[in-house]
Length: 122
Image: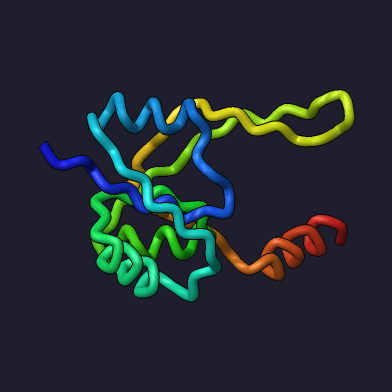
């Protein structure tokens, strides 16, 4: 049986706990780590194609993740627990992976909110 190839698009190497979870879900895996800043979804798709990967684990801006899901790629997102050690440094511990199916952002220009606050003060 062929190993599932995972494009790990992050500057951080996968933690042992992350590797074990991926192996538990997919069976045999092969991680291809790429540590670079990408320009957009098309570059990510090209990296996946060039490296013949089946899955994507990526630390990317939310807009780029949204663009990928619109193109049919549903990346895995590592949910991490953040704690501060005694020196005040952030320590990240893997909790679990989730698959991003869609990104919906509901927003409005901040100026609209500022107008509401101005109107309340009058």
